[in-house]
Length: 348
Image (cartoon, rainbow, N blue to C red; front, top):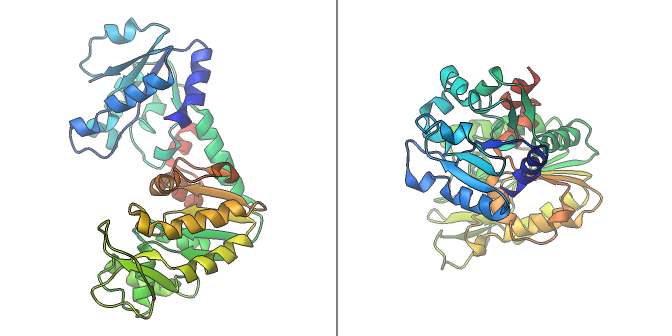
């Protein structure tokens, strides 16, 4: 919300009336827990001079809400993903959205990898532009990836190898070092023949992981435990894991190894926490990697991903990171492909 404020404030200063579109979660239908009411309330706190009006259903709402909108009113449409037509990029739905306004501004970089109606379809019917955050994200990510200072070190974590496998395959030709942590490291460890106990992994990707062994750097020790809040972590080498144990974080030797590599980098890209960070006992590896990044003042650093941002939100010295991206999937796809459906739509 705060990342979108510069564009919102800029448009307000230019005497524009604003209708905001966004989403929350991945609702299958209208559900109260996915309502944008908390977003509207927070936006009202951040913009006390304006009146934030949440429009429950723009398709059936009294048109007076839109035609009578004053300069001091900001309309926020209820969760756009409440409409199945959004994900289907339905042309008629996109056209209905477009009839509400005179121009379209996309400042939602984090959804630009999705070819949805409010991202792609609407640009067919309105003069369309990118917002300030959108511009900043694209310029910084493209600069870091097309003209990186070397050595380039990429750190990838998170739960699933499936969401990052194409990026890893691309990075092995571009980055000097690829450090793997989080549950996705388990696929590589299992593919090497190590016992990973009851740890999370994706069986369908074992052969793919096996082909990349030797091209990525994996944990040499880990913290074992259970996902409840009371289990004290036990540090074990990756050769010592029992069949009933769960890997929940990288270990101290791995932290040192990763830290040394990060300290020598000139370009750092990080996406995905290194362990089960929701439990503070297993957020130590993520903290260690973060500390190594902010300590390396010689490097350009790019950090992104929803879980990564959640994991580091209370960490100090965030100003030492060159760019913290609001996009997770969008950042990965832009790194991987060089463009996104939302960018292509505006360029067209």
